[in-house]
Amino acid sequence: IVRRRLIPAAGFAGIAVTVALGLWLARHDGRELGLPYPPFVGRWDPAATGWALAAVALLALAVWVAPRMLSATLKPAAFAAALYALTLALRLALGAASNGTAGWSRVFDPDGFEGPNEYLPALPALRYGPGFFLDRFAELVPALPVHAAGHPPGLLLVMDALAIDTPGRLAALCIAGGALVAPLGYVLARGLLGERRARIAGLLTATAPSILLFGATSADALYATLGVAAAIPLASRRVRAAGAVALAVVSVFSWSLLAVGAWAALLAWRRSGVRDMLALALLCGVALLAVHGALAALTGFDPIGTLRATEQVYRFGIAAERPYWYWLPGSPAAFLVMLGLPVAWLAFQALARADDTAIAIFVVIVVAAVAGFTKAEVERIWLCFAPFVCLAAASALDARHLRPVLALLALQALAWELLWNTVW
Image (cartoon, rainbow, N blue to C red; front, side, top):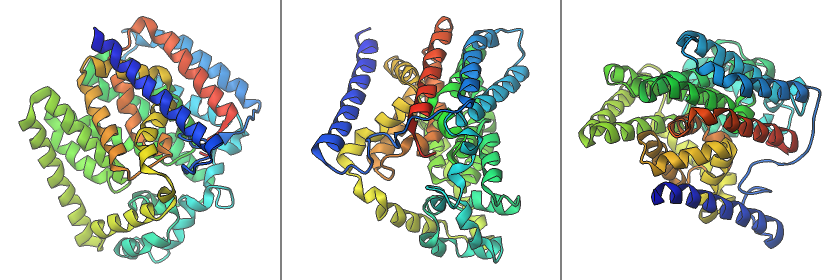
């Protein structure tokens, strides 16, 4: 009992100290931590449009209807479809609440503030075709915009193949694909927590502030969907091999998705022991070598060279101005706060109860923070971890408290969207 109370309290105390220290150092001590308001990305910038009313209405609808969606009379397929529609509607309304419909695609505009760092300006690198692009990708990385340079070539190849060459088209892909994370999170949770808690996990994923706020304005929302899609077969012994192949394929979109394999291996350790964990890790390693080896043989793509080039981009970019000592706790603090204070509290409660899903994702978060490869902006960059935290939180949430928890998440998401400019 003491442990169950101590861990959430200690976790929130650590977050509070980290946030207070970062804001004090940046505003009063004049220290450079790499962001104006550490540990959070963005700045104070109140703004609202008529879409804010639609966002309020839809968030209220989500809070009201959520307990009814737990009913067994609503079939799993119908629940998944309703969850997708709800997630999509919430993202569109909230994404337009402060800047109108232009807010859906503004971040991808090459003439905007962040647009020059995004993916569209990287498309000219494909002018000689995907074969040449893949063969020379490692050499091209230093010349690409920072977001394209920070990821493998998967998304750029998809954009080229589908003629996605405008901010609107790219936004449509990210919004429609990113919204699948909630129903896929529900499918993943069904195999781990059972039907009722799986539905709670899906609803938490649909309404968590960071998933909502960055789900309509960043490619990381799409990567989160791909990560959960790979996790579903990885978490099942029957189709584990397919999961390993899926993980290798989605790693062509984002290197961070390899953490999904680590999560699955840790879950296997907790549920079946060290031998099963090692077997899954070996299977993922073999699939990764096979997929990237085949890609290298067919196209000349150099994954090792690409990783090295990407590492140089990070090390000598803005991350160099962000001190490790602060962002070691700062990154997890920002990530958990923006995921939603109720979700963070519930996830800590699950960790205190030694829940398997909670232990697995918290270990991944700790390793990511200690590695220090990504410092700050993790509210967006670690978005692929968010569904797994929601999964852990669902294991600790009593269904009777679902409505007040979702109400708090909705209030946090709306307040942050209207008062804070997150860039994305």
